[in-house]
Image (tube, helix red, strand yellow):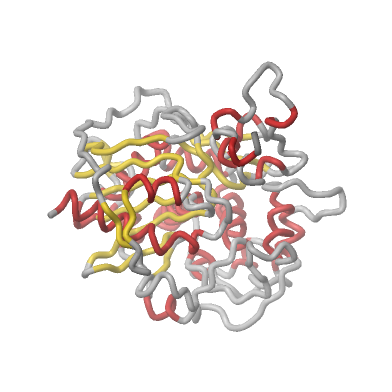
Length: 399
């Protein structure tokens, strides 16, 4: 049996597992496909982690009202017609949940992912940090007009020296940084080693050293440019002004209030700083529902209306368009959230590598969460089927 023929759930099976089915972080095998189909749902077995506490109370129940989706057909943006099962398999979907009008209408798991497995969210974590930052802005702890270097003097000679906190949150910082996941020599791979998200060598810089060495390039505030280092700068900012780690902030502001079943889990780098996060499918639905329902859970206010308005309102499509993201026409970005502008609706999206998606459609009272483990990191490779799939789901439920 070749590696490609091994079912995702059979990696690391056995006591001990045979060498040919073993997954390790240190040798980089956890991030090699198809092993990552297992590792994305079992990171706590591979690396140090830090929990954002779910709180002491009981989990908030999700009312279930099943709606069949397996008969749906999806027409991709290139005109290809796909059956539901083809969409799930071809995009390497690990789990999918749909909540409509407060009811969980669809929940499906594949391969190595189950209801109690926390799946890596990759850059979807940015939207949690953006939400925390908006909370700190609202309470006056953080001012989004402040220069980054005022709060973090260590970045006074970097790309962020003259950038504001808001420009970091909205990804409009001009920097000399190539983010091409398909090129192993791209800056993004050095960045990932610095964060501890992939194994590195003894001579690699820490993430704090790496950020301080990134040079400015071009003006700030004029063009949307999605660059991974911005989220680590924002994480540094919120930690610095609040005097707390990111896991504590995520728990205090969000996670302990949503009735989660499990802790939100962070990977940590060699300094103990949080990197990406992991959550169960249902708990990520609960996070999405919090935003969708105006910051309330079961009639209890969790987030201030001003915080929710800042997230739900969307960004500037003109600034976004200058970035040249051809697979996302008419979109915008703000506060570490993406926004799909479709038929007059503004739909916030948390989006991460390998196809992680949290999609909110407030006008249609809809939450869609999708976990995946596609072979290549760029989510843009799935855009031709992802948004038509969501539109097919929406049409099934709303029409």
